[in-house]
Image (cartoon, rainbow, N blue to C red; front, side, top):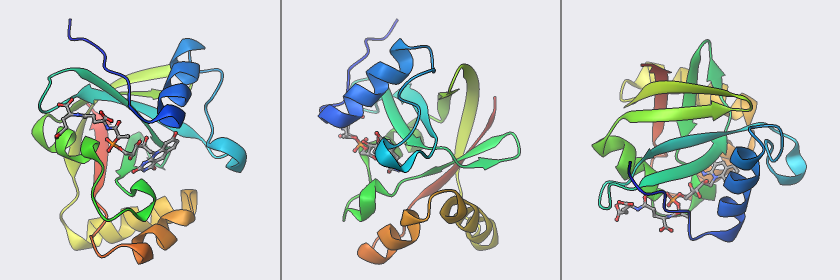
Length: 144
Ligand code: F42
């Protein structure tokens, strides 16, 4: 079993601990927005360790859309590189846990559709894209 290395970011680590520690009954929304969050579990591309990242819940049927916005920061979140290196993930959505595979969305039309869906679920994504020159990476997670 690989070791779990918690995030160095306090608020992220605390949300993961509350969410997972309660079995998905607490800490399931983003701060005061009340909007739902999922926990993505994957492997670190350097350490091979288990990493856990809270992301907004964006659903497309049975699939989940993962948006690498990081609040519009100039650099991609590290988890983007982890998913590019190993596409096998576990997604916790409240009390349900799914084994899934992710793929980065490259097709313009597909990306546009999933982007609109993501902004509908979490409107600040639009502002985050305006804040940065990088094109925010979008992944889709499908049942493995
Ligand atoms: N971030 C988003 O990008 N999109 C969202 O929709 C989103 C929603 C959200 C909701 C709630 C919440 O609490 C946080 C939310 N975040 C969202 C923030 C998100 O959880 C991440 O913290 C953020 O995207 C930054 O991702 P990050 O992977 O850069 O994480 C940082 C804080 C982090 O933990 N970095 C690790 C560290 O040590 O601090 C690096 C971990 C890692 O994967 N290391 C690799 C390894 O091999 O283990 C090697 C790294 C390398 O060099 O490649």
